[in-house]
Amino acid sequence: MSEQSLRDLLRDRAAEVEEADLAGAAWARARRTRQRRVTAVASAAVVAVVASGAAVVATGGGDGPGPTSPTPQTTTPPVPTATAGTGPVPHAVRAGRQHGAEIWWAPEKSAEVALPVRDVDGVPETIDLSAGAPPHRPGMTATAAFTVLAEDGQERVVLLGSDASTYSLDTSRLDPVADEGGNRFVSLGDQGLAPDGRHVFFRQVSSLEVYDLMTGKWTSIDTPDWVAEGARWQIESAAAGLGGEPPAADAATIWVPEVLGEEDGPGTVYRPSGQGLRTDWIAHYDLWEAAGAEPYGPQALDPLGIHLSGFGPATAQQMFPTVELVDPDGARVMGADVVVTRDQSFSNLSVLVLPFGGADGARWNACCPVVGWLGGPETVLLESHGNEWRVLGWDVGTRRLWRVTEVVGWVPGQDSVVGRWAALGPR
Amino acid sequence: MTTDEESFRLWAAERQLALLRTAVLLTGDQHRAEDLVQEALTTVALRWRRLRAGHPEAYARQVIVRGNISAWRKRRREVLAADPSDTPTAGVADHTPATERRIALDQALASLTPKQRAVVVLRYYDDLTERATADVLGVSIGTVKSQTHLALTRLRQAAPELAELLGEES
Image (tube, each protein chain N blue to C red):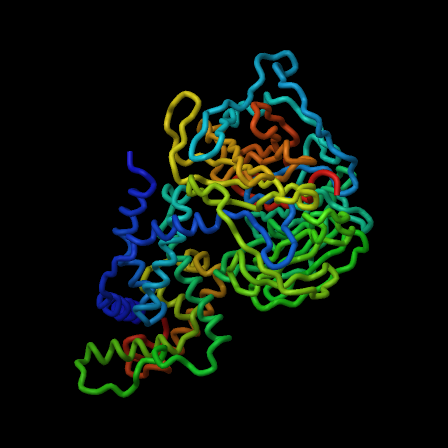
C-alpha cells in the first residue's frame, strides 16, 4: 500500500513533464563527436608524443617483440601462395580508392587460420591468460599486459614477459574502480603498459599506482578524482625533427589530463617515479575525416618515426567509418570495422577493412584494435576479435596478411579482457 | 532495411519522453534532465550498432543515472553554496492539495543523496527489480536494500505531510 502510494506520487509528478525533442540532435551530435575524436595525437606546445601500444576490451590481443628483444623482421617477404600445401593462401584484396584512401579488404575471420604465420621475436605462438601463471619477479620487463575480468568481478593481471612467458602480477593492493560515469573498469587500462615495457600503471579513483617491473617497487601519483582514467604513456622525443639523439632509456612519461573526461587539451606530465615535469598540451586531428570515421582503442605511432622523422610518425588506428564502402565485388557495405594507417608524409592513407564474416565465425564489433608497428612503417599489427582472438600483421598497402599469435585462456562472453602492448621494434 | 541513423531516430523519438521523465525525477530540474537525456541519447547513438539489438533504453537509463551522480560529485567540489534551483521553495501557499503534495515530494526528494534518489526512482517509478537497480547503479543488491531503507526513512522525515502516504514500513 505505501509502496503503491509512492509509485502514484512519482507517476503523478512525472506526468507533468513535457516532451522535448532531444532525439533529433543526438545523432548529429554523435557524428560530430566521432569526427572530433578521430585522433592523431600530437603535442603542440612540447615535443612529446604518444608512442605505440594497443588495447583490447573483451577481446583482443596483439603482439610485439619485448623490450629487450632483438630487432624484428623488417625485410619485405614474398607474397605467400599456399599454407602448408593446403590450398590458396588468403590475402587482402584491393578495392580501389574511396573517400581519399586506398582500400584493402581482409578475408573473413574464418579464413584467418589459413594465413601464413610470421614469427616475431619475443612473441609465442599462443599467449595463455589462464589463472595459475607463475608470479612475476622483478627484473623482467613486459611485452604486453592483460587484465582478465571475470563475471564474478575477480580480476587477474597477466604479463607477457620479455622472455615470451606469461606471469601473474599481484595487484591485491588496488581497489576496484569505476569511471566518472560509474561504469566498472579494470584498473590496468588500455594505456597502462609503458612503451618501454618497464612500468605499468593502474588507475585508482584519486591516484595512479605505478609498478616498476625491474625493481618491484610501487609509486603513487596523486591525481584529482577520476582524471587518472584518461592517463596515458608518452615517449619523450626532444630529438624529434632536430637530428638529435634517441631519447634516454627512462624517457617514458605519463600524461594525465587536467580535465575530467577530456582526451586532449592540457595535462600534467610525470616521470614514472612520480616527479611532475611540466604542463603539456595534446591536440587531436582527424585521421580519416572524409569518412567521418570514429576511432576505437589506442592509436599506434611508429616508434622509430617519433624520433627520426621530420614530419611525424606513421600512424595506425582502428576506426568505424560512417560512410558506405564498396567491397572488391562492388557491393556497398556499411558498418565494417577498419584499420586506418597514415604514412609519415601525413597524406597517404591505406585502409584495411575487416568484414564481419558469418554468424559463427564473425568478428566482433570494434574487433580490431591496432597493436603497433613492427619495427617501422611497413607492417602494422592488429588484433582480430571474435570467439577466437588472434594478432594479425598487414604489410601496409599490399595484399600480404600474416598470423602472428593467438591469445587463449579466456572465455568469450564471460571474461572481459583488456590488453596493452609495449612499443614494437627497436627502442 | 533501415539505416543505423533511421533506426536510432525511431527508437529515440519513441523513448525520449520516458527517459526525460526518469531524469526529471532524478534531478528535480527540467533543464538538467534534458541535458542528461541529450547526453545519454548521444552516447547511445555513438554505440548504436552494438546496442540496437540489445537493450538501448537500459543503457541510456544507466548513462542518465550515473551521469547525474557524477555531475553531483563534480558540483559538490565546485560549489560551496547550494544552487538555489536545487532546493524547491518552501512554504508555498494557496495551492491545491495535489500541487502541495507535488511540492512536498520535490522537497523530500531533494533531501536525498543522488544515489538514494536514484534507488527510489528506479525501484518505485521505473519498477526495476533490486537486481536491475543494482546493475544500473553498479552496486550490490545489499547496497540497494540499505539505500532504499535510508531513502524512505529520509523521505518521511523530510516531508511529514507525506508520511502517511509513505507508511511506516516500505
